[in-house]
Length: 537
Image 1 (cartoon, rainbow, N blue to C red):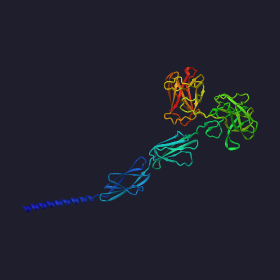
Image 2: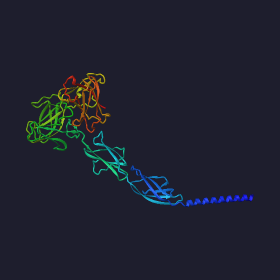
Image 3: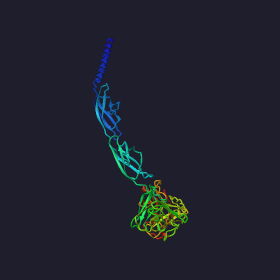
Image 4: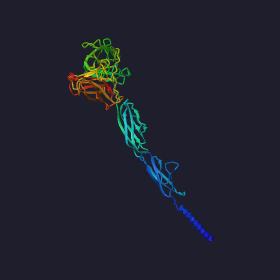
């Protein structure tokens, strides 16, 4: 029995051993049967944002891992396990990407595949180019676009311009040296050759010049030295015949010019400030270069809104072809003319060469028009207007039937308890009768948060309209206006005027008020209005 048992055990053991060896031989044969990696292929996914990022997914048969050689000069290859991918940043161009596949037994094969990276042109390019609120010669530029990497801006004011490079979110400022029309060009760059561009034509106009005032030297470029000839006179800007660096006026009284031909020193608006003539301070002077001695020169001053309020005086030249200063004393009025009335508001002057003689071609140069008395510094008139200074401080210019005066508050209650207010009576005249006041400096709309005018109004009736208009002091065509109706009678209320749409490129010094535009006033209580506290918020 024992022998049989041992024989059976041995047989089982041998069979077990033989079985184990068979399995081992089969595994080795499987490993040796794996082929060299084949059918290598690369899938490229180019991110469409011009970043140059490419996702590379390798495929192949019999491959456990891949080496990716990018073809752009990168030294070290990318390592990718089968089934994964890898990202790489490319510039624009054509690249030969090489892939090496590794089997689990160390066998390799490789393939090369072309990759073209071409960046798309930027899209939805938008340029913002706006005039600076504080300087009309300065422009601020920014831009946005899709697929751009950066921007270049050309401001168009110099030859062979080197552009300024900027990024989205940047604001590039540029100040132009002179007025003119310019083309601002913004170029949006992709990561490669593709670009997009946009242009905007801008016009820079000179800043409004200040109204002429005394002393008038004709040398300050910030002033408007326009003059107004009449009676046949011809006046032009000229160089001093003895000093080319000095700017003067040259007046020709041509053949046939009237005996009273003259030249107003400025526009029909006259001087910016009143000429403060008094019985004591009654003199003005003008430097004159005359072709001969003994020629009468007359100087007249007047109220530009009321020409009959005037005074004029006359002197003779004493030298020929030489500069001399002529002094005009208005206490010595010219024969047949009115005497000096110092209560008049003198703000315009006119000069007459060879007065009383028909024009015969004589030429005169003149310069340095001055008031010789003690000049009182004018009050600065600015917003807010509350009418609490001396009434004469507020110089209103009435027109077409409107009359403004500074009065005691007729109802110092409610929202307005101040003592002094302005009163406008709309008399018969025109349906647009009103009045305006000139501020000392342009209104600062850029500094107002809401760009809203507010005016306190005391109206005799509900529904009376108030037009509030602002305009340029020397060019009334530059203006903006809003109209609001009253909602209360015989009580103070605040009217609000929305000026958010005003053109900030213009300068506005005049404030114009017209009640019931379109309706003729009659000067009655029904057309008597009070207003106060004009503010800009």
